[in-house]
Image (cartoon, rainbow, N blue to C red; front, top):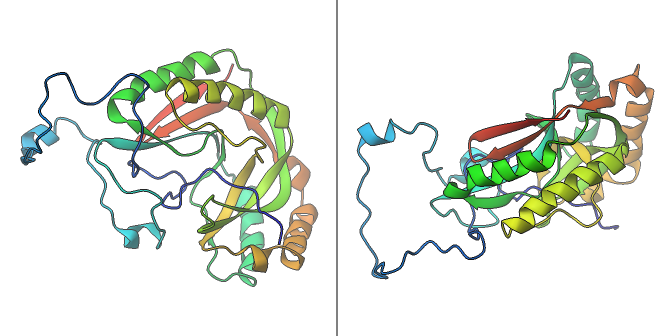
Length: 266
């Protein structure tokens, strides 16, 4: 069985998981312990509700697998770390959803546990972890890098099977077949920011795509071959698929925890 392309999700991420669930690295040269701070463990005191209500949207996540479709976390939750992901959003129209409604039942004849993605996007980074106090500087660095990029069009019409790095989740996606160079240019700038903050850069030979459906586990054996061929035929024969799958990239978006930051392209 051939090696499936990788997608930039951790095994605990739903499209892009909300709050961080990882042990991240601080920016180089910046430790969390201040000079003279005691190394003795301190008892955590409860924060009054009146204080919590002053900062909506900053609560820590619950580590409950039942709430994440049975997905297994790649890394343990650590307070103050926020999962962060950079991507181009795709707003699915009615015709695209009609195509998906035709495609998914056919895929489910091969793998019944497949479920549709709730949101659609094309990743420009892996899922990385930021300390909460680095989110705004990180986003500002991204905005500076994205400021000169023009809007562009691309086509995503090749059905392809993907897994995450741990092979604990499988995805059906539509791979980009034109516009690849513009995606590489964007990733190059995103990677510069990642390096500045000592974070993991994107894959060396990325396959840009829109994930359509996913399931827990490695389902490549069931989906590749005849099933994949049938899914591609559905896409090719769908009415006006050539125009439908011609997409305009108008913004780059960063999601960090439960916060969203948009960077419009020129």
